[in-house]
Image (tube, rainbow, N blue to C red; front, side, top):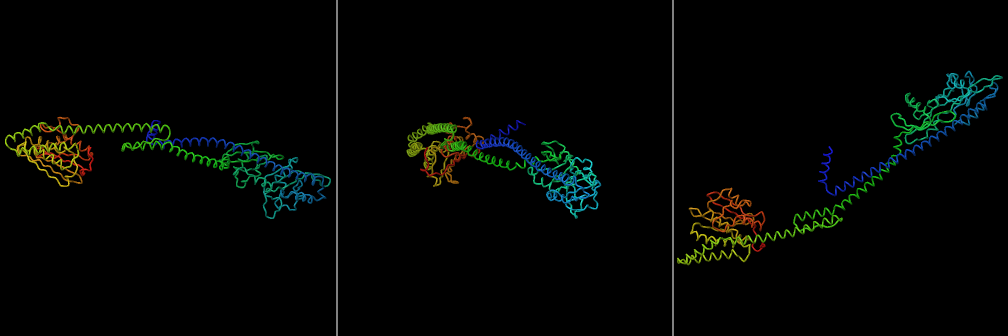
Length: 597
């Protein structure tokens, strides 16, 4: 698996450009650096933020505890005032306590719903504000009554309930009963009565309703036994949930982590003085994260902007480093195309040194190419000179012998004709050292050659030369047709019984100059034709004339392509016993417009 991944990476690196590789590497490094830095800062920031939030929540809990303690102290003070200043020592048989209770009620009416005193049998002794017991009221059976009687030394807070002791005109107010035992004096006897202060539940909830622990944290209150006194979701809470919250209240003061309703929460526990009530703060850990989302978002925005700037910088840096290499590559490709481009030298030190090295190498290559071209030109000229020198001396000797024989046999006219043809033949062969001559001169040259050969072979063959007028002024290569005609005579007609015929035609076809040399000689097979133009064929593969110049077709083919390019040259068509046709195709260039190499 690792090897396959490595192979894929190597294959990708082989296809990727330097700029892309550098940009990707820089960007990947930047991403890793930003990611690691961001994670480190995030963890540190989160830790500090959580610590700060916990400290803030602890402070909020302390404030809530102080507010609740103040409230409870005031309510306990009210109970003491009622017990010791209003009830104790007063003969309830002769004195009315309502007025004094009313004064206390007015003072604490914001927190108190009613104040009442009951005798041991549950009969109402006094109440403020004035009111009547409800028809179904049985005070002596209420939990607050029994608690006060059973434990007269303590003050007792009961569970929140709907006020039902006094007639309320159909309204349903939630109250928290506060009860204690009081000493009632009736005549000369004393008895234990019960003081009931019904605290407004709304006043208690007001202490907690504005408390906020994060965005979704809350505070609730239980008594010392864990029974819920206040909870923001008390009315929609079932028994199972109440039990769970009561279990939390059993913990000592401090901070804990608990799972509440499927969420991981931090639970803060504090105990209020005087009563043992438990104040519990619940803060969802997701809430802490949510509260810090703005700060995290700000960090992400900063890092995103930094990453964007770094990416842009990486792009320009990679382009700055790779542009010189790309320009060097372009100039090298131009050298591959035409060999004359100027090599770019610039950029960083290494790139400049590379450009200078390539420039030196190109200069050396150009020098070698020029030397090779000069050697090739010298070789071509040597081959051309050899071609001219290869005209078989026997041809010249035989021609001179024929001239001597004609003179001796008193055939001066034929001798003059032969001498004239020979002179013109050599004059055009030399042609002032020029290699490019008009078609007119090339045809005249081969005509003189045919005149000599026809007289030499005593009318063994005939010839015909046809040329379109517009072809005569076009350019051709000297000594191009004569070797082909020579091969036609030596190879195609030497062993023929009937009279041979050589036809030379020059015409314009498809915008090119086409010259065809055709004979009715012995012909050749396809294999022999293929070997004639095969540069790799051994020397003995192509038959050579025992007589003639011995110049092969490959020589003519290479000279044509040297002058005119690979799109031009000669083709051979031949069949045994039917003859051979050699066709030259050259560009139609007027004589004088073509440079002589």
